[in-house]
Length: 147
Image (tube, rainbow, N blue to C red; front, side, top):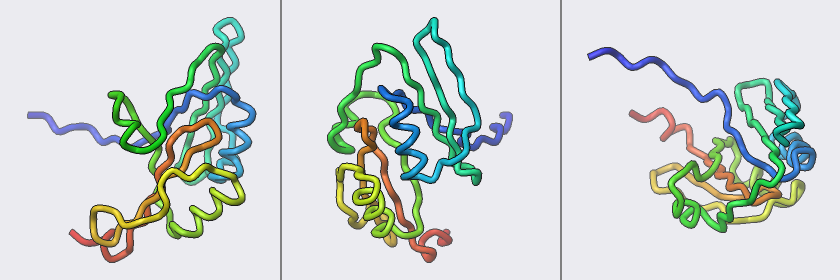
């Protein structure tokens, strides 16, 4: 049997109602200061921007005229539809990052920081300004390197 090729995530794409507002929020909140690509298709009613932090994190924001939001009030409700449910980001300081996003960036709280299912793992959830779920994950160095 052939060996599977090697993969790594290039970017995650979010459908948004207001590209300019979401781009501003993701620049501030996640430090996505670089614009890697822009696409404007006026005939299709589509505008996109791929934002990057320059270290490998990329988020594509796509605005399409007439799109409708999907409500995901919490991580479990998000699984009611068979699709991608959230963006998960590993962070070095869960409490500090959570505080930054919910205070300085005004991200709505979904789940306060708490223990994860595995030893040494903590997590929290927030919404971006349009309600997309973002999970923040902290994994202690001890558990991150354990076999």
